[in-house]
Length: 127
Image 1 (cartoon, helix red, strand yellow):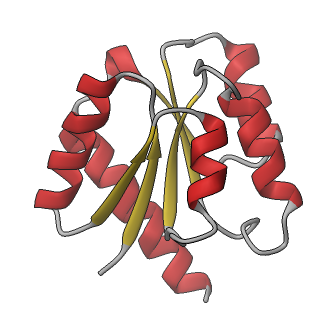
Image 2: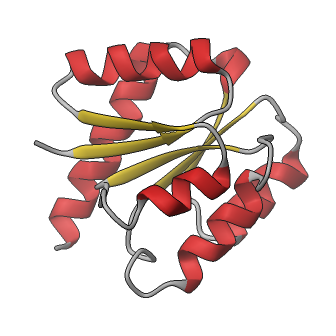
Image 3: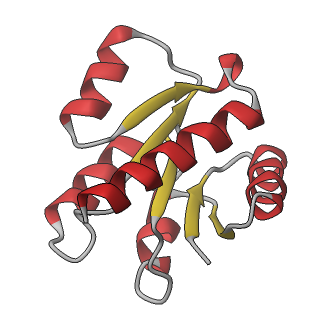
């Protein structure tokens, strides 16, 4: 079973992600901030990470930067999920190594599942 780590401080949204992704057949772990997300990587190695940008303790950009500096985790695909739809944020996320960027207000959960499956398919094709 493919594993997904969701770093999202909005408990309602995090739960919605968890339910939808679990129904699609994924093993899902939720972290409420970037620090918790990085900590959970010690015991949970995801096939993909969905990363909120605005979170307490450590934001998504700082978390992504730390992820991509670690050879153990740098290969994990990351989708940034944010309410920030500005071009600068999108470019910053992609420059730091994110594979995709979604604006939460424009997102349907079905669309998220499609993006996750496409990225994981792409990862398998490259392996």
